[in-house]
Length: 456
Image (cartoon, rainbow, N blue to C red; front, side):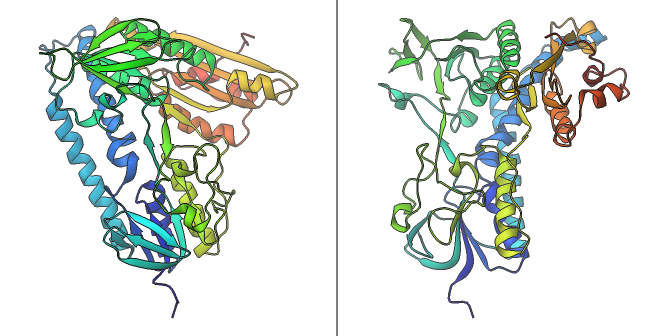
């Protein structure tokens, strides 16, 4: 009989932790998992799943308006925020139950409690109950951070925005990353007048510069005000009679009165209060748990996966890391999660789908130079709808090897295209392979295989 209560104890029942627990259990390990909030983690409960539902809801505003061009007469639409919130809650509750049921079917013991490491191979729950485990996996994810400015406590984050009792008429969103631009786009279409405040030169730092430019122009055309090289200076409660109102002072000298302010200026790994210092788990300069390529921490018997390690903070990456850990440690099937060529989507409107290197990255890495193929065109739907929406596509190609180094798309269906294109890019497809592929007509994606002349 094992000297431990469990072979594996997982702290955090998000996507990475749940996958690791189930796979380890399938290999015969005795597994327990603890979660202090709701099973499913950030992605399912207060992240990508509810966010995507809200994005889809917001796009109906465009669909109703554009239907007339196709012969439809649509009565004036009415939107109910409470109904959307209720529908979202029903769906994430269903998913939470599914996650819990799958853990139960896998014979994983689940504890609805915070867990802290108190000694090597030892975990303690909130009520004081302790368990020993041969191995411990930390999968506690990350959380939004608020800027260090006066009145920051008056702002909301992406955690609270999903369940606002009512939508404000106006909102300032501070930030320029995924979360900021996604919520700016969806809230604007749901009727909120949005101002995006970003301290940098252009939104979506790290993305291809052309993609950033195209999305910025589209957001402006949709009525979203974008203030760059501007930051938050101070937040104050609104004047009497302005329930929930906020008085916001910006570094450009402006003062704005808005119904709500949301900060989306970054997330931090959830490492505080886990007892990591007790067992010698190293925290790196980014505030994340330091791990090697096998997700091992600096403490014997302890691993970490997902956003708490701050490698690539995406749900599918956490799932792969958790799966690789469980197969390697408990299944005698060693493999590593591959962090190269990870496809990425930004569910703005229009949405972004991308895989591989940006033009800027490619030029810095390729000594032989790169060729750029790109196109911008009006989608077929827009020809009758009257919409000004356009689709942007860009291929980054190595001049020496002819390999596709990066694909970048802005427009309807961009995320779906990027997922499929990631297979081709990962397999080492060349521009000649793209050229030799028969176009599927009429489709937007056909443009990816019909670009013949480089623009630079």
